[in-house]
Length: 205
Image 1 (cartoon, rainbow, N blue to C red):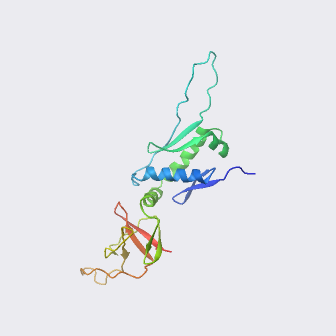
Image 2 (spheres, rainbow, N blue to C red):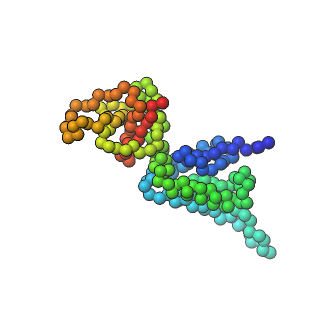
Image 3 (cartoon, helix red, strand yellow):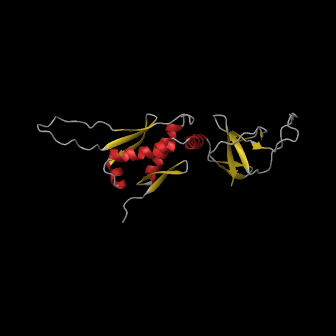
């Protein structure tokens, strides 16, 4: 019988680390959200492993083998992200916490080296996952919408977010129309403006 409630941590939809419980996954995701909230997705994110020094008592009279570390900390941009313990090593059937921490760090490095992953995380952590507009749920698509100069708004706010939609290309592109555009009824996609000043799509469910 499996004593572990295995749970796979996915980062921006990609498989990352298998933990021994869903609680561990939630804690890891919460900590990741706290760290990346102020990180720039256009800059590299560094992952490193830190092994705290083991407290030493009075030196023994005769030399003894150095005990294996019982804890390793994976840091993202210098901030603690994950603690790797002997229980984790046992669950993962790893030879030790340092070996497991290094393996997890390599996985995280490979993910965070992808600009698309960093961008998606920056969107997810700062934008609502869904929004109710015109009586329908619109679900976040964590990507940057291509801005062709066709996004419009009449200033309407929903849940303190200004709603934008996309209009067809004008037949007379150099004509200026100062009249606010009519609000479409339940468009398939709406757009919100991210704090970093790019548009994010929301798909009607």
